[in-house]
Length: 261
Image (cartoon, rainbow, N blue to C red; front, side, top):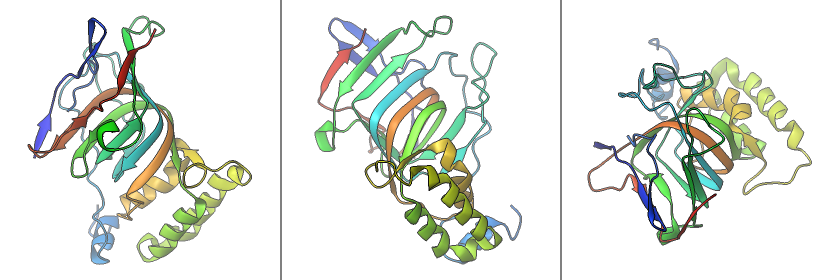
């Protein structure tokens, strides 16, 4: 297993853009992990690391995509700020995400200036959609990808029935939390009763789903392997991809790259 660190350079006209300058692509005895293991489930995930392992710069890279596929979400930690090179820290509501891979359609990357966030250093769009040669992806099916960022928008498309089925299937693991989780699911999805559906159900902001997702993840209960996501908008302060030497840690498609004003 190796960890990759590199800037991504994309040529737009005569200018070479350093795409990810701010990114370094880089219980108790009877607690949830033991119970999950005894029932043959996944182990409860390791906690978020105490630090990134380096000091990221104070200006984030904004990553946006209207359509995303998130593979094997393993850990979510809220309010997890990290120290930056200027002595400050990322926002208090920084979220830590661990997953295998994320692939993004119509990817837009913008680097913000620390003193003038309304005037980006650069911004460009990769006009891609789909799989194969059109894939823009971070990580891969066997990688460990970690992201620290401020989530402005990240809507997971899933049905209440899917989550309720997961909760009921693993009721023996969740114990006394079963009823409260089912009630939470009902209240989270109640506003979407008459709303348009996304790819596989209503698309709900990650922050709204966290009370359910955090419990399922921490108890080692498996989520759907691929989660459709819409309206991704994240200020990324640090990104790390650990993968085998013969596996790509980032893939950019053969698609049009356009510099944005």
